[in-house]
Structure formats: C-alpha cells, structure tokens
Image (cartoon, rainbow, N blue to C red):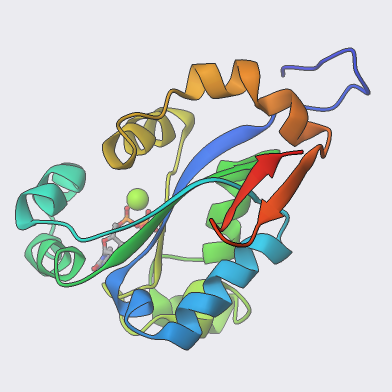
Length: 179
Ligand code: UDP
Ligand code: MG
C-alpha cells in the first residue's frame, strides 16, 4: 500500500465510469447519477459526452465477444449518447463498482436495492453504468475514452491537491479543479 508522510493518507486511485445510453436518454436519471457521484465523494477529473460507433463498442467489449449477450451489448452501447468520467477517490475502483451494484439489474434490485443499477437499470444489458474492474482495466479504459489523459502526470501534478481537498467543483464545466 502506498502511503505518504503527509497525514498518512492513501494516494487517490483513478477509475473510468460511464453512464450508458439508457440512463443518458433520461435527463432526470442522468442528473441523479451525476449527483450520486458528487454525493459519494468522488472527484471528477474529466468528463465527456460522446456517441460510440459500432466498432468502438466491439473493441471496448472484445473480452466478451464469445458471450451470448455480446451482440446485444454492442448494439446497445452504440445506440445513443453516453457520458464518460474519470473519477478520483481512495479505492475509487472498488467504491464505484460498489455504488453501481451487481451487473444484473434484477439481481441488484433483490440484493442491493439502493445501488445505481437497482434504482435506474432497465435490463441486464441496459444497466445504467459501467465501471473499471481493476487497476489495469482502469488504465486501458481511461485511455480508450480520454486518449490525451496521462494518469501518471495527473498523479504527479494534481493528485496531492485533490487528496488534501484543495479543489472546488466547477459547476460550469462539471469537473473538480484545483483551488
Ligand atoms: N451484460 C449483459 N448480460 C449479461 C451480463 C452482462 O447484457 O448476462 C452486459 C451488461 O451491460 C454489462 C456488460 O455486459 O454491464 C459487461 O459485462 P460484465 O460482466 O463485464 O459486467 P460489469 O463489469 O459491467 O458489471
Ligand atoms: Mg466488466
């Protein structure tokens, strides 16, 4: 575990979070999801609205290409606008996946009714959000969505300010910035 001498606080971790087309299509749900990110103490490092082509979808989910739901997933993820975020927090990967809840919406509603997928998901495919599942996939996925973002540079130059709370939320740009 990486610890610093300053207050022994843990270095912030970055993760890639996506609001999928089913949720972006509903402005009330989209706003509720954005607010959940803020309420759960994630710092928003980058934010981007985008639409995928089929090929983007296929490439991003290549690991699932043999699964029965792959075609449906590919169609869905290129069916309309999405919103991607780079989020920072202690243990961001685990916390974001915990907030999303189980992959399958009906299981999520049963086992964790307060999670985002239980509250807003429509089906096992149209399940509201995506979150990286490891440090390696977070790195790959951040680059996939934000090719210009250099995680190493961010950790060196911006992370200390984010960790010590020297940031504010810019309500025009909808990201956190250093004060
Ligand atoms: N998915 C699906 N049916 C399933 C399992 C997954 O349609 O039975 C979709 C769903 O949108 C999920 C995505 O495929 O979010 C990726 O699946 P994964 O197992 O990686 O789940 P996640 O990491 O998103 O929880
Ligand atoms: Mg996954």
